[in-house]
Amino acid sequence: MRKKIIAGNWKMNMTYEEGQILTSEIVQMAQDEQLKDVSLVLNPPFPHLHVVKKLIGGAPNVFVGAQNCSDKESGAYTGEVSAPILASFGVNFVIIGHSERREYFKENNEMLTEKVKQALAAGLQPIFCCGESLDIREAGTHEPNVKFQLTDSLFELNAEEISKVTIAYEPIWAIGTGKTASAEQAQEMHAAIRKHLASKYGKEVADSISILYGGSMKPSNAAELLAKPDVDGGLIGGASLKSRDFIDIAKSY
Picture 1 (cartoon, rainbow, N blue to C red):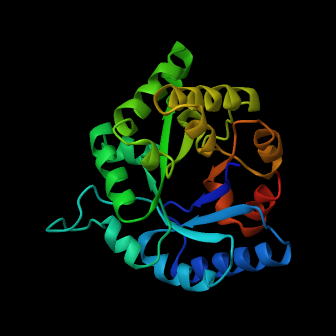
Picture 2: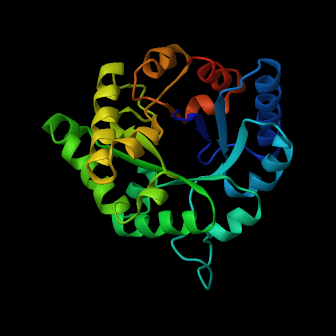
């Protein structure tokens, strides 16, 4: 059975104190409201990682993730943070290839391949993002575009490695815009992604990989999206900064 994952991407938000409060609230709510079969992943900015990990403590279904890692293992790369460093701080997951990283920092498929390999070698679970912009969606080429991202960045991996990767589908036109892909549009793309993975790795492997929806999921639309057979969870932006909203999304299965 595929893992149900609700991952919160804090992006460049939350001061030290705000991050402590948010983490503590989420951990407490998850415990009080007995969220058992859903994995919650908190992905704060780098400086928060140690404290968030400490506050999570022994909570069985709450994990810490980073928003990025370097494509290099170590060395003279000022400002970068490597996968081994993240692992040494007890980080479990790492987001790779988020649309904002691709757009603002010009991360390409070749670089993302290296980041995924670095993450896996360090024992981290990559959350690999793929998706399309509004012009690609309107041109009707979104499916081949997203498939190419997967092929170019991930298909060098073997079956064992790809099984450790979580995919997050981001309809970029729905991020931070208030627009949301319909549940049907989300299911259509998630099914296409799974079918594409199966074409390379076989149905059994493809069926084991969790595919998250990353386009403005919130409490009001989470149940409809998560009810779809190929939508296994969410990569949550704005709603992850409010503990009640984040937990309510996780309770929407």
